[in-house]
Length: 341
Ligand SMILES: CSC[C@H]1O[C@H](OP(=O)(O)O)[C@H](O)[C@@H]1O
Image (cartoon, rainbow, N blue to C red; front, top):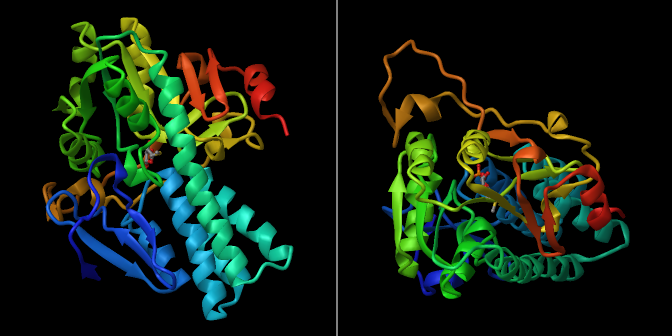
């Protein structure tokens, strides 16, 4: 592990950086206390970084995995083995499988390490372009002068840059449509508190952190017009898997007349999965709930259940924004109209 000072600021933070023969990741386990870079020299190290959440966020783990395949090709590692290891790193975010399928197609077509490097770079570049386009599309839905709420971290750290839901927020702030942001802390890993607030404060975007359990109270007070979230997998009928706690935000939003927006690139859409019932939900170590910052906070002997995603039914979503356009009141038919092969 090496440390380096951040050379970029604001939405140009690039947390996943290809350095020619190794992959450099801004270690998200340590933010905001420390800005340290983790250098991965082989596919095993990339797999480990994904499993341990040094790199996280659906698009970012897909991009990192693509670079992991390049490292395997450069080092002459058995490619099928590297692909299998990377694919098994995390189960819910389909961007991981999407990126590996794309790399596998190039391998099957006879691509060498240089050609695979070009493919991984294309995956990374396309994600940035998609984020910027989604930012414009999503921001246009928001009434000028609004406050919004977000959950987890969907910004530059979770993508190739700019962000999905946080990209809409960035574009909305720039356009004067969003005046204020509320970020849920996102227990237990605190992506909202540690990462989203880090990005918002660095950008100078007016924002307040709230406890996850304050969300309904905030909505009842009429403080927010939209809840804007990312996604890890969107099924063919529009059901959306995202960070645990998203489902209860969608229920509360509908109850209080607050609009609910999902923002994700088309690489997050899984038309082979019929509905949210078919999405595998990642269960992580109970220790993530039983401790805070590595310090045990719950009595020894206590058990915990730690699903890290949940599924929001399409019926609770007002708009799904991808780089291909906006799907309002999503349904299987409306999804098919945009994503049918
Ligand atoms: C831009 S998608 C980010 C997405 O990733 C999060 O999960 P994790 O931090 O566990 O990788 C979460 O579901 C976010 O919405």
